[in-house]
Length: 285
Length: 302
Image (cartoon, rainbow over all chains, first blue to last red):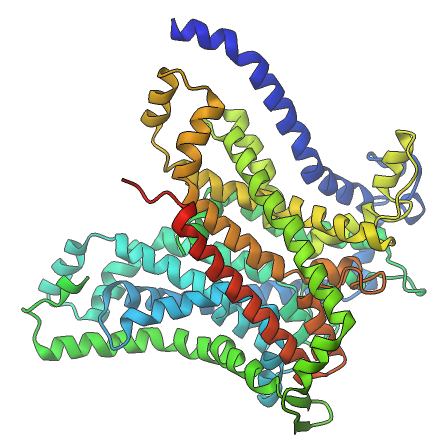
């Protein structure tokens, strides 16, 4: 009875919902198709009317020019090592901190976590002026050091610490007790038992940190003073201009496409990790 | 957790544990004090000074910065723009994300693929997303080209002060829709299937079961998503800087962007701190209000 009933009812609703869903995804994906399409057009064809989704003429040379005419290679390298340093720093800071919050009783352990989590409620835009002054006191303006520091200790790192804490809380206590009985110190338990089991949590946390660092805009813009050889990709993308200051769209879109490439690869390989990490850090914080 | 104060641990071991805990947490706490807690106190402190780090001047001015921003028509406009941006962006993204999550909440393969498609803009940098949209919304760009193809007149998306803000809201909405969807998908996993099946058997239609079961059960998550998106709406910086630079005039300048302009371009750092304090208080108030709403909005079980 029920089966028959369902078969009669479903098609209209499903088809309508499916159509809306498919149409809804167009404004999300077409911009990316447009980006790639523009990146291989000659400058003259960018504003053809009607718009050409498939380029009428193709100019692969754009992808060469991006590297030859600008400091793009250098900026790409900046993004890579700043993200790598940020991820490494965050792992070193957040894994022990998360373990301490989950398992160790130390003075103030009850109130550290809520205070740390309050950082998630504070847009960094509010704090950028005193941060700039502080970094300026330390003589770090016009360097990449503050960009890494912000990545390792700012709000994204608090999320990382929180994710690690949640993971260590979920570990069965017996395992650690067994280690303790076998004569391991607290540090030994963390290093020999907790950490080796944390691979998947560390991977999720490293991925989210990488994304945050790779996509950051305000911090690299402000702290590097916009110096050409120090900025990261998101800031660099806006520097593709003609002599008269108008954007050089084809090169800009080639650069943008290249800047998204690592993200696309990471996304294809580890979509589940990213989605789970975002859902977990967003909802349970 | 309190039960873990194991009596069998000797005082030395417990000291060792406390020491290790402090060592483990120290870098995170020191970084937090330097980059978050310290700056919060600093904006409160410097908001009563006239402060220019380039000239090296720091003069106590009392409440002058606050009086200046209260009397500034520009600040009133910018505060209004910030609120309008939030009112446009947050409800649309909450409702949109929930709607998409409900629609794709199934194990069918093509829906999982569609889910991924909705999520793609979330992982892309806002800078890249914004630049592509700036190109498409240019006067002779793809969007107007499409309109022309449909026989419509071109729209000056980013050059008309009454349209630019709406255009920015839409671009941010499209970027964040997948984020909202993912959070709601996680929320929907907490709704027991049996319960939904039970009311379905009792004759409730989809809408009724959504209203009476799903919506109340996911209310705590809805609240959290709303808070997260509200905070995100106050963070709007790259979008504005890359799309309109706050223009035309200051039609699309929001407080976050204004702090940057005043503090780091004009180096009116005391004044920028006062504006930051106002934004800080606004974020805090809104978050507390939303959490208080929880009392009558959120179903607490039982």
